Image (tube, rainbow, N blue to C red; front, side, top):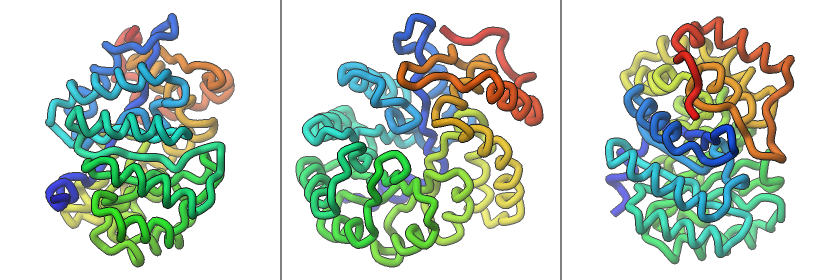
Length: 308
């Protein structure tokens, strides 16, 4: 039942930002334009309301609207994988069921943040959600933001007990950990990198692709890294890995997606606004971001004014 989506859900799954207008409302026009730009640029899939989409800054109604608008805009052109996780179990259940109802290809469910559940509790949380839906689920492990690491043995147990848990996004700098994911969950388990500098190395160990914030700025190049690898052109994939590194570095000198939104504002893609408690980077860091964007020739491609 899940083999077909496991074959399609590969490559660069772009985690699209949620743009706000100058009044702080979700900028739906800019959002639709971003999704279309990603697909036209070769992104292999679209994800929204993950970390890069600032879900904790959105109301439940806004999250629902963003998911629905994204699903309608994608319109089956590439796989659609919304983030449906929350620190609240019932909210996660509600959003995951909504993703299934709207026809999403899979749902990405983050390890609950702030409350630091035990491994036993994490198993129950994910098992309950998986049992309540038929939609394929990508578990999202990002210990730097959640303050708890989903251990490999817990993930392997979930993969064994829940047929619809088909993969994991590992935003985990522990490369030994991610190697053991495929060893214990099976080589056909979908492993996606959420750490930019590990996108290429994870392909080398059998990863399915990556969900990289950098795709918001250079979607074609981020997608091409996978395309080159899949075509057996290792040297070109390695070249792109190193070519993207300065951009990867500057986009994470402050908490994601603050530098990213500043960059997209400079490129004329969005109004560069976040909702408090998040905010744009300092002027000093914004100058660094501008310099890096210029080095890639990205500002010369920018539109005359930002959306919104």
